[in-house]
Image (tube, rainbow, N blue to C red):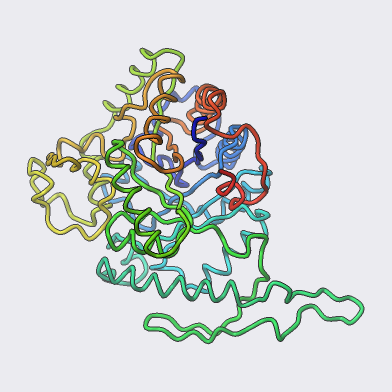
Length: 429
């Protein structure tokens, strides 16, 4: 029997989520503009038709800069927390996960919003915990700089402690709704937390009653050693960077060893992927080439600059990446290019950075399914997070109409939902 794996859809509430210029599409084929609610409702309903576990939203707070604004490189970015409230109303089973930054949200606000969303979505909400990494984001919130990389995680550890105490500030049977005796809740079962730490103080209790899941499903994407430590300590599922089976195996083996050392149950790993599927291999390859060629080098460099938190206009792009100054941002995607001793230049990776379409998940449904199965068998992990390479409603429609039936035929993915909550979906297999 093949191993079943999870599938999630990746987006930002923006014109182009991951692959630069993925908003470029024949105008006559665009049914809804990206900022239209119909655009997002169609995606959510398509993902649910394909029995995806969830619809995941990354997020960001920075401005686009000259290049980012010109090409819409993860800019503009609207608020996905608000959007999910609407999308949960047009779906019944699909889970949702939102990114909320520990750098700018107060812990009480995060705990309150996510508990409220747990009620609104009927238990289908998750939280991707991030520490913001971009200096531009900090300056939008009145700060000159962010804390150093590892200290951001130290602060986030304490942040999670506050949130968990708030979610537990109501005992499971605290709410009575006793009409006869006119008692809404037992005050002896609702507790202040009186938290006092190095970074945070919070009195509590949370002013939202526990939702169906009590707390959201916790996701994380730390790739550095300190990030992996944080992810193993707090998350139920980790977003990993795909690439080669060897790189995936190194990551999944490391996470498994860390989880075992921490006496934790195995933690799910979902790999980033961008299949390009068509009826014929030649059609898929032609589409792949179009995607690669449309991305200017300056767009790739601007994306890297934002992720690395480095001003690459002052760096020689023909210099090997090993010579880059210290990266204070994220280096998960960069690690794909430097595995097995490789040392490419910034210029060499600019067109393919964040452009997973440049990989080998290209072809007919049978060919792509073969690769996905092989990656899980050889690299480990528990599934894939798919990100669109073109107009997202059509991209996901092609995935659901072409690839999903082939994966279902192989018994690799579910054919119907069994549980109700997002946590149910992730624990199903």
